Image 1 (tube, rainbow, N blue to C red):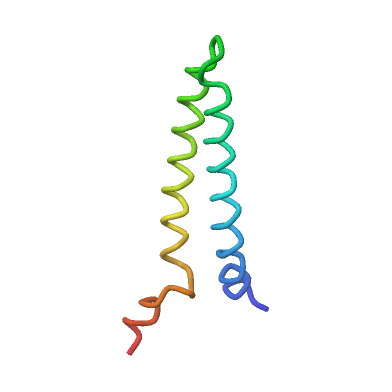
Image 2 (cartoon, rainbow, N blue to C red):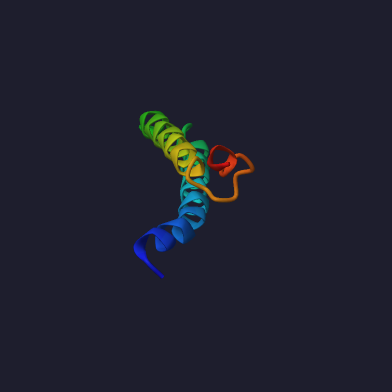
Length: 74
């Protein structure tokens, strides 16, 4: 397996992994938002979760499982 094939294989894993992290950040933000000093941390966690979702959007564009992935190759 060459490096390009490895990356194609890893993309799906990375997408899932980042989505799990974003969900964890949201969960923890919800748990601490009402605590003293928790609101600021919760806001940062939610911002981090959003940025992870944005990065997932970039990875999804690389996913070979997208229906339109090969559309431009005909």
